[in-house]
Length: 506
View (tube, rainbow, N blue to C red):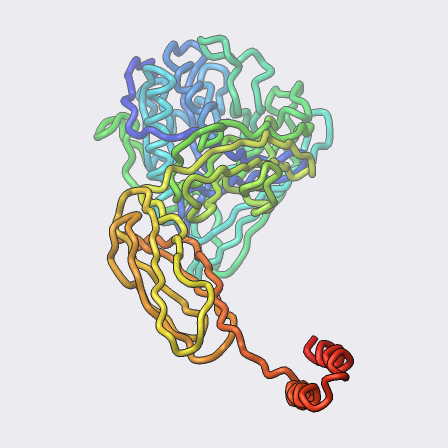
């Protein structure tokens, strides 16, 4: 007799809840984004051994539903409701089930027995999913196409592409499930089982040559198996490719209840259901209104879609204005890396979620502020000295700058004539330093000065204008001198000659 085991599974990892659901609607396949960066990452497949009489299975069921709904992991599962479905009971027997609940991940690569709470089971399952998804697998891709014909009948096409140079050998299983049980299959918490397995559409061994493909199709009739009441809108078909390489598995780890384990190299799903828009993006990290955010922080959010068959993509808007610009479009990940941000700056962001039917949901605009600069730059320097002068004379100019942290400061001086003083100092914060300079030619020069503290933070430039005027000879001065001599010789003409001089000198 199969046992019901009240085993508390200790949580092994704490994770953040950001999501991007990965399943499609009307006649489209499920392909969620892969969170673990692995060249051979694949969709992890879980088979949940359970029964409607199992008291602890409600916790395992709740954990699986939450992981799936979070949409963080490339993950699919089915419920093998042992006491309601002979086909499910047969699959449990193949795994040499020790007791309910048991989850076999990837054909037994990882096995989790028992559940004491949703939270503990969820942490344990996430650990197993992570280990499965980090596993190196052959480069294959399994795909599904499903056409609903009505009256519990559907055409199901399955194919496998082998991108390796050597043959792939294994078993293809295609499971027909409901999305949510319509037949009264409830866990002991009163929740209808999700993705309850009905029967196989395929269960056959195949061999696919390197670089080759395999495909097959079938007419699946639910009436044949006693499921004539199933309906469009509540159907999920899941395909899994089990590698033929044998491993020793144990349904009561570490070494009891042995079974023949054949690991899953890829899985995919196809949902037949009506479409609704994606979930409203939520749970922002940084949270709305957060202050002191690290300059290297990434953005995270929870997304997903109510349809357990929709791929979801995201448009990311981010910037320093209250109407932030679009910075990323159509990404599947629920993470955005903005790069190094500025100190003491307000940033705004929002997420728009899209499903593969073209429906979207726009999230709120969120705001956060980055942390204070631990080493603010000095204030722009004050410049003091003569504003007028003559060429080739040496003038003294004084400079001072206040550093908010009281650090010593250095000055960089651009004299405006292609000569420079590079970081003279150090000088105490707020205390004047000085430098001398002379200019060779008459002109208007602009002195530019900036300050730098001992940690390398630089101020803005300050400017100071210096004029060295040119003494121009008046063009008619020699005529004026000639007229002056005439006055001495002809005093009676003084009034007329003086008027002429005035005109020439203006």
